[in-house]
Length: 380
Image (cartoon, rainbow, N blue to C red; front, top):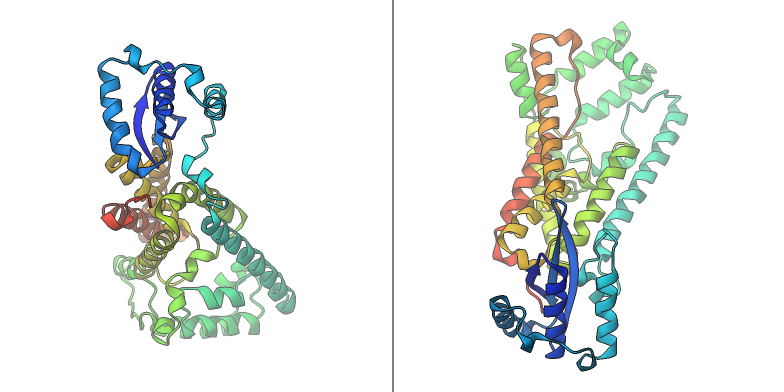
């Protein structure tokens, strides 16, 4: 199934669609919106009919009012006419992807990932409450078991810090930042142990003229825990974090899954997820969560495919890409502001804890995959 014609005028789109139906070329008409302008698309269902339909379209453009393009009502099967009339009367802004109509469950992978992330979110929430109750913590200042299992890496330094937190009852972030003297000595001893915290920390330490010693990279992964390359994508830090990520996953995943199909879609998610996680780890250390890197990869992929192969029928308005670009830029500027404060005004510094490296690299990797012919849409 492929878009073979687009029209600005609904009457011409209907005329051409009905003529194709008269010639027994199965087709579908839908409309999209671009900059408040309505575009009418003609889809041809069968791959073997596409070349013929494209030739007819070129002939139609030369003289749309030619009498030979008149498609009398009685020449068209009643079922097909009802289908066209429903399209003509459709006024809803929400557009159903024509490819989705061809399968009973066209978004099963997207739905599975969404439900998996939601399930893990509630599991993590349950474990967090259980830990807070067990150790009488006012705030969750240690990792949950699922976080320890799914984080990109879990240095021994972090586990030792957990022991100090429990030992000295450092039940809030404020207490952890201002611990009693004995706890402070143990924390300083732990912090002096070599551990990799990312290039950002190394660069910041250089500007602050502080000594820094990096530890071993990929500790847990080198021990065979290769799932950690991807699993940070499946965890989320809070309700708004998972809410917006899952909304974006559903919106963009519904565009990609019917076109890439099962294996390619999963492969795309794994490649972008792993690569963006690695970049984020190298830049910011192991403590990051969220599906954002993959989502930005999806957005980058669709952006390139819309321009390179509009006949594939991706339907994401330009305003969506603009919103995403502005958001990523704003988060980058926020991180840059934080860096400046940490260097020149450490007393009032702040850390936004945003995975900018995953966002930016995810978008880049998605665009790169969009250029590979393997990930183009091929109707079977």
